[in-house]
Length: 461
Ligand SMILES: Nc1ncnc2c1ncn2[C@@H]1O[C@H](COP(=O)(O)OP(=O)(O)OP(=O)(O)O)[C@@H](O)[C@H]1O
Ligand SMILES: [Mg+2]
Image (cartoon, rainbow, N blue to C red):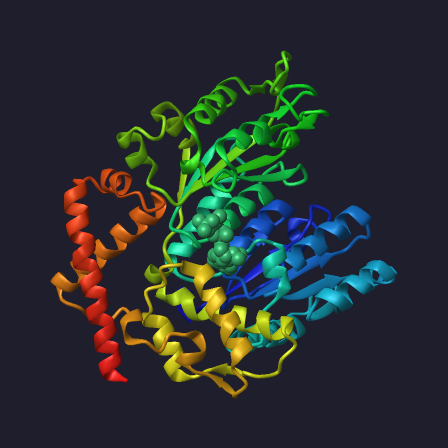
């Protein structure tokens, strides 16, 4: 068997078990990853493709057992086999853990004639669980697992593991709905601050005058209506992590205050005089092109460089065709469970095809919404494109001429710019880098193009 065809197995043991015990395991046709530290084991489960895992449990200690429980809960998609001994298994807590989380258990000493068949069965079971729709597992959501077997998503997970323990600011960029918040959450979870607070602030959702007090807090009497002290979100994140979401939308005076905090690691509450030293890790996220915002003068260059110490780019869903179907099945199962339905049982071939070719402008969030809608409206056995609202031809990523693609891209850029400028054409034109007159002309042209499309659709009906 070539190394490529070998199956991966994670082998977790503690120093108590000793290397000699582990070395006695001869698994010729398996890629064995031997790990004896719990954090490395968790990271391996997060980033790699393990289907089966062996855990040595040769002692009972509440802390150790808790670690094992955390590991096997994180890797619920893995089939686990416990290697234990008579004394350890006599403990009821150990027995309970094995019953609740493990596929099989064996008593030491190692008997390869029993272990190998058990491993093969566990591997087969894991394959089977993956091959059916009903493999959604709530642990995925609880543990902020980023689903996706594409190379792009694998890279993202590996970068998260590398960046998590580094006490540096991370800037996460990517289109809307690509999982920026989820990635930020995973960064916190895999850092030393995991047990500390996790705080998020959405800079776009709050008016400029409120964001300052939301971030820095205020003293009693700081302004009219401030009749009591309020702790700011940065202070609340002390010893933990804060996610500054939609950082690209933050007002210039808040940018200055944030820069000061990032440089000096201290804050002053509004209306206060005391400088408070804090230990907070900052993660910032935005769907905007911050470099461009710097060039356009809407975002401070010094703040940009402070935030961009480490950069994580979330890839759009349309570039990870491999992940679309995995995610779709995962959410199918989740919504069936949530809506307490037994139908639909699967996606039709045609539904799978349209999902593969759809452009997914709203990325994973759009996929979630479409699958939720399909589960709600479909009472047939199979989900059809119409249930996903993907039966209109203009939604798909069909091959188009360059001219057509250019027009569509232009149309999208104009649409987004006008939306962001709240309908103000002068501002939208500035962002697009064209004159107001040109924008006006393009808008007129695009309206005509839209009308043409609608006319075509009517003709098709
Ligand atoms: N790889 C993934 N695996 C599982 N769920 C995902 C994945 N990526 C995104 N999601 C889910 O998709 C939804 C959108 O993700 P999230 O809120 O993190 O996106 P975002 O990039 O922050 O979007 P926005 O820019 O609009 O704020 C969430 O429900 C999230 O749990
Ligand atoms: Mg977000």
